[in-house]
Length: 460
Image (cartoon, rainbow, N blue to C red; front, side, top):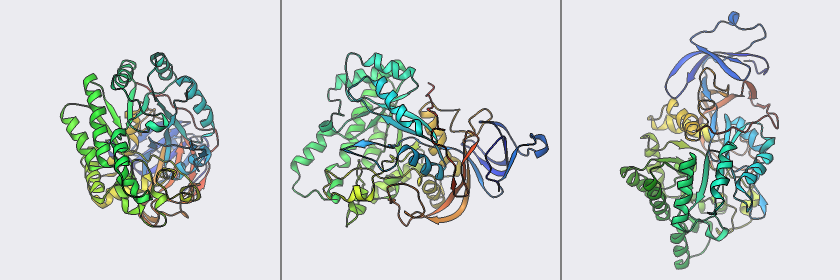
């Protein structure tokens, strides 16, 4: 296998996996784009300087899109472990060629917040899009959101919790007006769904401690369910879709089903954490490492979400990658002050591929839909991203579906120095990752270039 990355590329004899079909064939890349896909493309039909990559026994996938990341997040007086350069590297090792991160609502115009975040992310070595946070209504909001939309952002994010830090839009009429503006402008609304009043009441009535294990009790699943119904109710009144981030619980899932039965178009995202980890991880000396929001739930919740994935009730699996170092995480055992979040981008593809094999009901094509095509379509990046098609960007992953290996801090690349999936045995590993026809990871060697990633505008 060649790992040279220059000129045109011919990938031969791989199993090409897309959402709609799987077939053996060849892909010819010319510059940054896919030029031809066929059962066989002869080397003699390509320019003489074409690099040939032999993919016998391997799968060819569209680049994975992690639709929910927080790289270089400044929070609570510190910054997350993975910078944009480090985030790009770990992503490349996981076959992730595009991430969708966030711009905050920082007491300046949204357009300025977006510009500042884009400037910060200019060191990315992979592609990136952005969701725009909106933490309050004001008279200028429509013009601000129009400027954001014109700049290439297709989604806003709102919270139904975190009143204490100013993220919560409390008044229903103001929240509905935000939704109405977004519908008019063609913006998707994504929601962190936890009911703040339920969390507050739970905390006020709490008689226990504030150890990591208590986090799951202080932010109960009913808070997620009620927030889903509240938000979906507003979306239903306006006849617009809604996107729920990191759905974590069986109760939240049942609320989604209830509101879908009422005709609301709900796009659901979940994460590997809520599929494969449960709240028992919060016990013991390392419990702080597993604190995130929403908190880990029960094995029953895991099972409900796993079934929902295999039944097609979940449209996107992302990671909510928010990595702090072991030292940062373990600096507190009070769940109110532990830095919330874990790494996850690099683990995404092997975990979901392994899950598909174990369940036997999730094909590799379905995994591609959850990890690439689905998010590309949800956030206006398709068909530039998320598909293997003539004319699409040559973001390509060559994947060995049979290699067995173990997830650990020694085999992964996050600067956090740990993985929440330590010791997980997985099947399937990325061999090569191409970004716009350029090899950025091959045979265990990172070749990404700082600043080579582009901001990808949403097209709606």
